[in-house]
Amino acid sequence: MNTLNTLNTPTTLTVLAAAAQILVAAAFVSIPLLRHRFGAVAKAAAVAELERQGVRPAVLEENGLRFDASGHEWWAPGAFGAASLTAAVLNLAGSPWGTTLTWVFSTIAFLANIAILQSQLGAVKSVRAAFRRKGDAELLRVDVPAFLAAAEGAFPAWTRTLQNVRHTVVFAGSALALTAAALV
View 1 (tube, rainbow, N blue to C red):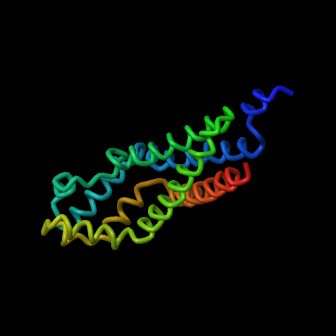
View 2: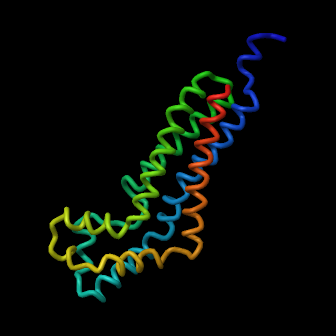
View 3: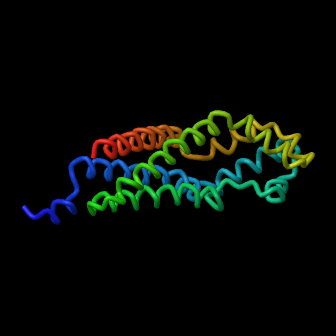
């Protein structure tokens, strides 16, 4: 057997790592796609809730609060998805860079997902803190739990399931890719 061909042929472990990384990439872009599709509906629900609370809806725009997938809501998960996909392609190509990038990107994806999960679990607290940091008196009057419930309620009923699947895929896929990289 030709040694050069052996070096460029991905092993079962590198194929497994690549498959996990492709799933992680898809998981990272799933929520921005959902926000892109339903963000306007969520904003309308949030605006209606603000009006019900006697808060000017313009306060959202004035303070840069959005429900779509613009800004960091898109580029951060998009970058994670692209990095994971890059590592997967390199793994499938049999490149040693695939393993190196797997260590880097899968570790970062795993840790970033912890931060994402923590922010979702503490959304009310973090939104209140963000409103305090803005220093806008109107934002401080917002009933944050009702505001968030209105916005979240505008997304499809299966959104929570997608979020849970997304977290599971990112945690398990990153761990699987890292395990495969360790065994290569």
